[in-house]
Amino acid sequence: MRQPRAEPTETSLMLLPLPGWVASGPVESFEAAAFRSGAALAHLTMITAAADVPLALWRDRLALSAAEVCLSHAGRREGARALRDAVHLTKAGDDPGPAGRVFRQWSRAVSRPVSVSNLGRALEGVALERIALCLDATGPTPVDRAAHVIEAVLTDNRRDETAALILADAVLAASLGGSHVLPLLSLTLKSRDLRRSGNALRLACHRAVLAGVGQALSIASELARDAARLRAVVPKLRARGAGQAVDLFLSRDAVAPGALTFMSDRAARRLCDRLVSLGAVRELTGRETFRLYGV
Image (cartoon, rainbow, N blue to C red; front, side):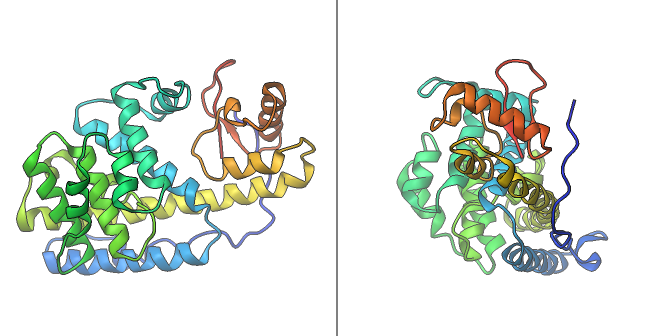
């Protein structure tokens, strides 16, 4: 049973949603779609820069959602719980399975600054030369550059949707001055969109950015409140290493007690259960063993 959560100490953590004129109504023309997606991206940049959002955690949570979408393109239906198990309960060096590999690619992609070498470590089997060409993509807007990347990657390999979407979101983030991949396009692009090309694909990408920003803002707002709750209970924690544990919870979507390597197994489990009782984190699996915890 989910434990009641402590109330945050501040009430100013709600991120402003997209203005109604940006978010609502059909997007019929290319010009309207491009204008509204640009407005959405500007709003996202302004709001998240001003709010106390745990950025690493936000990116990892969005990576989980993006992985689910990528798997749906391949006809798979693994949900968040299965993906977390595959990655967080697999020993280092072991194969997490097809679904776990997709989530692992996304998690690695969002965890380090955008660069050819970092993306090369995240994207299994993608040549560094291909990654470099994608990061140098040109176009009149960041979204157009991202669409160009999707088309180029899928022209070479129609089944490489995950790499295409990770690289597209990397180009989008870098074009906007961001340091890390932020899943946006990948949250709402449909399989049929990935079969488009030219202006039809560009229009689909502008629409996807508009929808993706709305999702990302909702998650950022929730995480800002949840992070405040977690930080508020820190003075109540007596365990040695509790501060390090809190930092880890604020950077990862899910944490296994075994990941708290600076504590004994028993101390790590007791701390996780203590945080649940304080309403600061959730137990994510519903199991009695092999548990995972997250903000």
